[in-house]
Image (cartoon, rainbow, N blue to C red; front, top):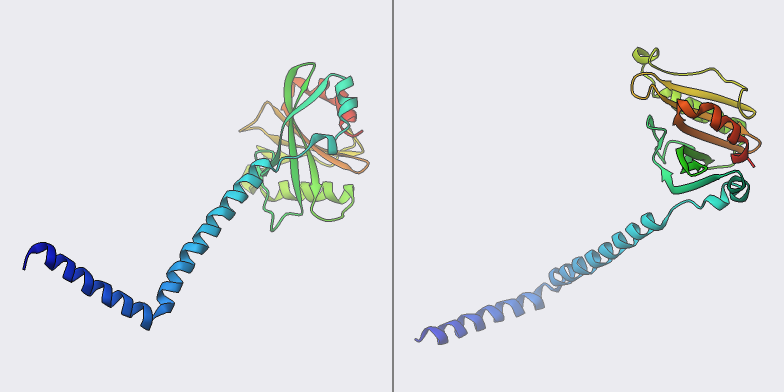
Length: 207
């Protein structure tokens, strides 16, 4: 028998068995089709999720009095939802009761540092929120590093209440400040050389 005719015969036999398998066990092929459909939906959902993450950025006008800041030469840029409190404490959505909307800020066109609005995930007073933030930072400081990485006592030097995180090893020339006034809790990060300058502008962020 010629090779071409033999190939056709084998193909016909294979087709017969496939057809029989479909008739006897249709659920197998239904499952395969369902898998492809599910995968398509999953891929589309993943694409949508990526779009959401990319587009889900905080709007500064909902968090700060931008007009008053601009009048004093302060501008905010690069808004994002932060995944950590400063560089030290990762925020875990299933465990922590707050999150941060962080912006870089400039004064008279000079890049200074970042300001974060600390936002609670449920209704809580600003005083309680400040306490939760302090507890979060306290929990990540190893006992062996308390001399190099530590929190100041609760102070009343800026806003209605505040405290500092001091990192003498990794960031010896950076100030980490958390402060509260009225209903807002803010976290600032900036070089120590700008401390006196920034203190004069902090009340504007609470407007």
